[in-house]
Length: 278
Image (cartoon, rainbow, N blue to C red; front, side):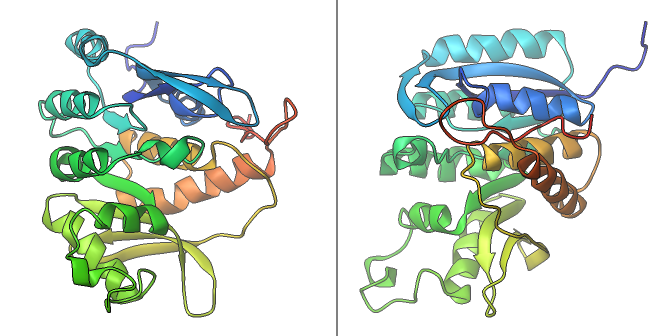
C-alpha cells in the first residue's frame, strides 16, 4: 500500500475512440509523467485515425456532475481544459475551477481535428476570453488561433486589410497576448511562432512579455494529437510542481520524443507514442 498518492489531474474534454485526442490522450500522457488522470467528458467524437466525423455534446449539467462528484472525493493537483462543445459547458467549468484557485489550470481549447478547431463561433471565443482565460495559469494556442480569438476584441481598423498591423507582426502578437494577460491569464503559450530567420518556436509570455522560448524542428508526420500531447505533458509537469518556464522545455522534449516514436495503427495519421520512454 502506498501512503503518498500520485498527483491527480482532472481533465475536461472530448472522448476520442482512437485515443489520439481528448481525455484518452491526456490520461496516457499524465500516466507517462507519474500522475493519475481523472476525466470529465464534454463530448463524444465519432472518428477514426484519419478524421473526425462528428461530435455529440454531453449535457452541461451531466458534465458538471461528473466533475463535482470527483472533486468531493479526491484532492486535485492541476486541471486541464481541452476542447468542449458549448458555452454552457464553458460556464460550468469556469464555475467549478473557481473553487480551486491554487491548482494550476492549463487551457488548450482549440482542437485542429475538429471543423473550425472546435470553436465555430464568436460566442465560444468570447466566452473563453471572458470567463475561463482570466482563471487560467497557462493558455496554449497557435499564433493563428490567437489571431482568431483576437478578432473578438480588436477594433475594426485594427484588423488586417483595414490599415492595421499585420496579424503575424511581433507588435500585433504582443498586443494580443497583453489583452489576455491583462485580463488575468498568468501565461500565454503561443505555438508555432517564427523569428526573422524562419525558425519555429513555442513561446511563453506573461504580463511583462517573453518569458521563455524553445525551438523545435518540423517532423514529417502527418500526426493527430501532437498539440494534445504537448498540453497534457505541460499539465502533468506543473502538477508535479514544475514552474511554467521549465515545463515549457520539458514538455517540448517529451512531445518531440513521442512524435519521433509515433505509430500508424490504421490507414490515417500517426499517433504520438506517449510511453516511448518505457
